[in-house]
Length: 295
Image (tube, rainbow, N blue to C red):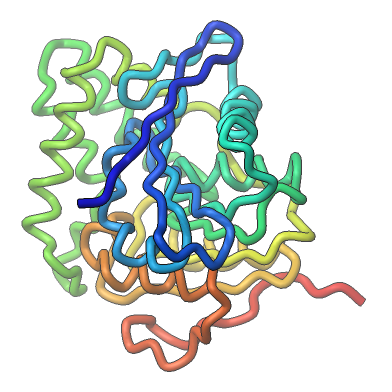
């Protein structure tokens, strides 16, 4: 059985944690994984089969996730980045490969902008390129239900944000994942005193990943039916990153790591280990160079 080591760290009055699962045969820099808002460090065992043959796996409870302290109102994305850097430094690492998904992709992108030398490669999935007025409207409608004590109604509305409901398209494991996501969300907002407010900040505060990036080999990927930001929006974002590769996984929406977990893990680790991204039947088309090129 794989042994996990947990460490607790502090920053500016906040307490947060990381979990390390060590590889018996590390060949590349450790893989640091950060998922969606409220998604904690214990939710990434699905990546062990892909990561551990090549690298240590590090997952985190940044402020607001798991048992970690929530951000105070004056603290923001910069605090999340500083917490990430403290984790890397605390483990005595010079560089890591960073997989950020959903909210985690916004954090990972900002971290790489701050200190590109700390990241060997970057994989950004389900990037919240732009929170549309439609999504804000859904959140507002759901929040009203939550604030009147209707947590189940809140979760039903959020399912419209997070999951593709278009019956004309194919999404793997659609019904099972929908029920799982609703249970996870309900537990997150009712089992924690700060769960709802943490989620609210992730929707209403400006997370837009702007400003471009150079010096870090990057993969941007998503499910072809992502509902937070569309495939086209994420491809356009990828084009702002120097030398970036873009790929879309078929028959999946924003929850690609649940709907097509093997394929998502395989894609990320192929990229981190430098293996070809050609001939992958689970992609909607060839992985393509989307990023800007230098003269």
